[in-house]
Image 1: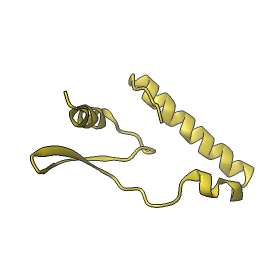
Image 2 (image 1 turned 120 degrees about the vertical axis):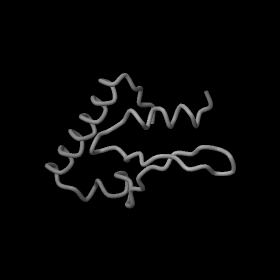
Image 3 (image 1 turned 90 degrees about the horizontal axis):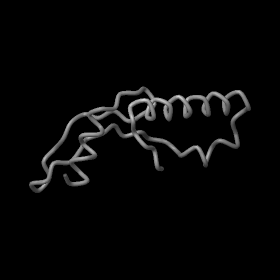
Image 4 (image 1 turned 180 degrees about the horizontal axis):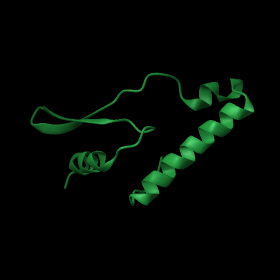
Length: 79
């Protein structure tokens, strides 16, 4: 399988409120490409310093829950 086919197969297995949603695929020049939710905004590294400790803890817990979900469905997160 190509990397694009693996990516599409993996997106079809994911459903979590803190992950981009997979909408389907489109054909671009004969190649099937995934269509995923676009999330606008800045990365945490740009804004986390302005958050209070309670907000930082909530964000950290949400990240941990998301990684736990990925682990539970046998995915490896390498970002």
